Image (tube, rainbow, N blue to C red; front, side):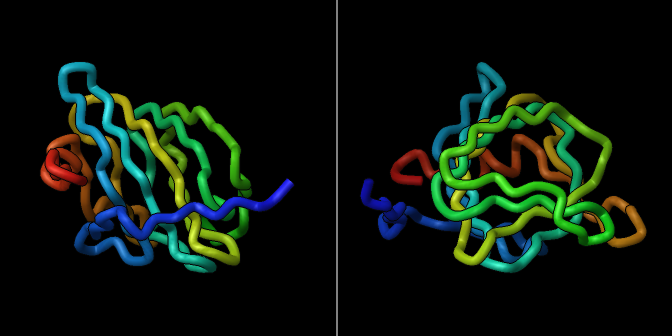
Length: 143
């Protein structure tokens, strides 16, 4: 079977200030049903900021390997292309990143209020990402 490549040339990638090695495109912000659909692109062989998920996340890896790392930087899990994952909220902080190529992952994020907390290495909250942050990045005319 031929290997298919995910073509993201027509996606308008955006960044969140203070979060390196990550681009995103908000595909839909359904505030009535408390779900946001986002494509995240994790840079190859890099890790994003330490953070925790405060709400339910369902993910589908569309390209590459979606890698998760423990607080101390050790590899925790590899989610290959095609992997669907249901991740409940968790107090356990982690980092995420791409494998040997950029990883593109579709996230369905459920909930209201704060969705994620970005942390420094001493576990201090440096930023909360809310529904409103994602709605502000949503371009209803083309992402």
